[in-house]
Length: 331
Image (tube, rainbow, N blue to C red; front, side, top):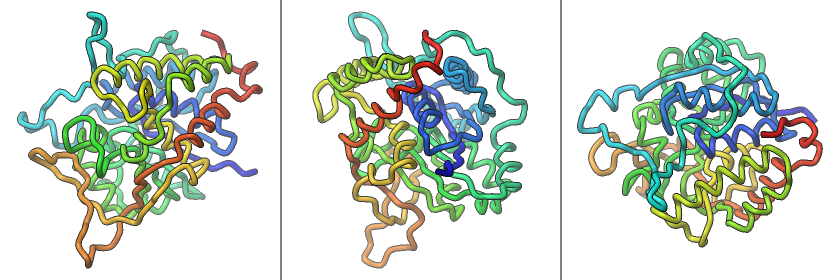
């Protein structure tokens, strides 16, 4: 079976780390490169965390560090709001994303070319279109598409973990990835790439429970154990400040974006939508759906739900695959 070539755009991060492991272990995917961006933490940390995951897996994939801040948002002081997801548990501050993943220091190095310029070169020269799975702020892609809109022809499919219709997390109206750089998200929507959105509406359906996390750990290899450790931390923060619809559970937003490239049936109720992004006020970062009878032309596909049980099976099958045990280093 011919593998689908993908580029990951990440702000690693706990669920990004799980998404990276899933992409590298999915038999259907070939990861051509990983681009990093600021978001869950500063780009120096997201890049280092990405390299730590790759080092631990023994996979020397090209890593290109990208944007350190939004296109324009943080030039306006009134838009500078702390979006860190954290809680105080037993007197200790716990973040859903640590600055450094609890892994040994990286042995691989990032490439010297900045991520937006990697996109310009790679997509302009691609002999076959590539899938892009973007699970952080869309700044790298916003820059690249602004510099050369024609590179969109090198993209087969773009899957974006971001946004929400009836769900939000960083503010009352917005999801973090779109909220961090709404202008970049609008550039992507206007580019003609027609992305698939994997929003909070879907990822909050596809949660993993405490018992399922324990089952994941029982697979016994590094990827399963490390994912379980990250998910237990995420579950603790969710329980403290953002309880989910299933008791003692955690979201795995970014891994669902990878999983749906492997198996599109994991997304449910996927609709063609015309979407625009709010740039200011209480709705900043919110994706606005055109709800008029005569709507503007659709510019994306938007998943309103997901197959929770199927996604958990995907995580177990991918992270716990027996043949991976002998290939991956132990922590």
